[in-house]
Image (cartoon, rainbow, N blue to C red; front, side, top):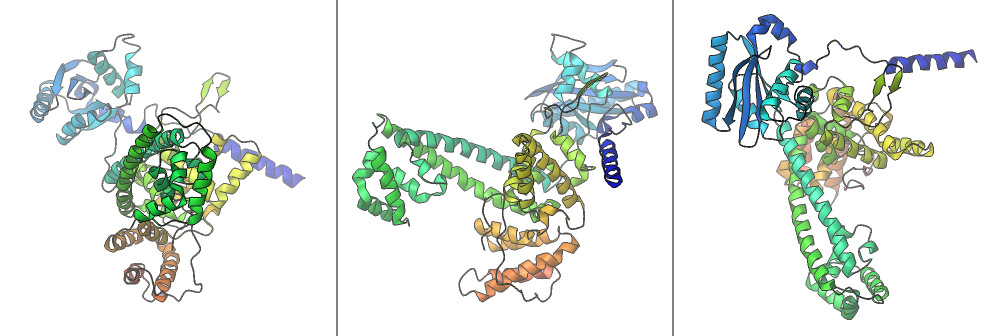
Length: 544
């Protein structure tokens, strides 16, 4: 009894210490502080250049720390000669007024602020970015109901003094390239998903219930080809089994007879309904949309191959050792995160992504368990939540945790956020550390190289590119995980050399990977097969 009480009290103490807020050293943001620099040169020797950008031009001014105007406000065209004149004017003002230090603040405006940010940064000025929310909050008290370019510039100056002009680290390769490709792929996937919904809608109007016959309709080529041959169930019945068989054979498609029987059984049942008078038009619309859908997917596959190559050059490739995470989800996370050195700990990831509850506290009132904060990096949060969905479905540890939470009546959204929070801690330890990940979710870790090889096999990547990616991935692995990877690669090599059929060039590719892993002679595998690995991007098992 005493031991239980002691254990319970120790748990309470730990939870109390965990919830205790960290003491802040400054009221300003750490990457927006200018106080030490102002103190060093003096308030009358420090200046701030504020830039309010638009698409083709910007408004800008230069003022000292106290807000006394030194230049402007004036208009700056987004042209090289106008930027050069602005830089020259700033340097002349520095000499005239004895300014020893200054910063340039640019308000974030879509991507329009990048021209001014790059131009002033190239000229040697420290260029910082101010969020438009900060500008708005500092404009409203001084100029309520009046929003103009001069009032925005004045608000920027006040925000910069308060520490909201933030220094943003520049992304280096391959993270800059990876982020652009990840976002482009996500945009194409979202467009393809919207088109797929439209296809189902128009197909249902022409042939009600046809798409529900198959679990994965858009991957069933026979079902799609048969639906293209007729615009109504009555037309399918007129073709009959022999007609469908003949038409599909003319297209060179392989199919099973039971698939045709299923389609004709549906057609006999649906033929009793009154056909839509515009069925032929709906048929023409959905077939056009399907052509566009296929074209989008033809662009997505090469992008995914490029993503695998970029991911292999970063330490984020280590995330693939966690069951439930594959190339696409790891690349999505890496592209939005950037270098792991930009994050002090896992809490910095959840802070940037906004994965924490909002709080309202005043005097004795304290609501610390509000909804998730709205102001956050939405793309990073979406990437983390997609990984949480994959882990809840495909990782046995997180699937079990999700089942227990559901049994307790936990809301599905809160369940996903808990998994997402756990993943941020795991992801930080996996990417930033040099030791194998020790966690119940990866007691039997997946092979990173085997996942990468299987991904390229699915995407029909040329073998020279596969070899380059595998060797790049080896350089990112922790030293203590290389023995595990070497055993898996040796097993695959043994299987390929024992087979009479299959890709013979793979037997020439894998020894180079083993040599990079530091294995001169591959150990003879004890088993004859490699267990299937669950993946997050296909929802099934890794192909051999």
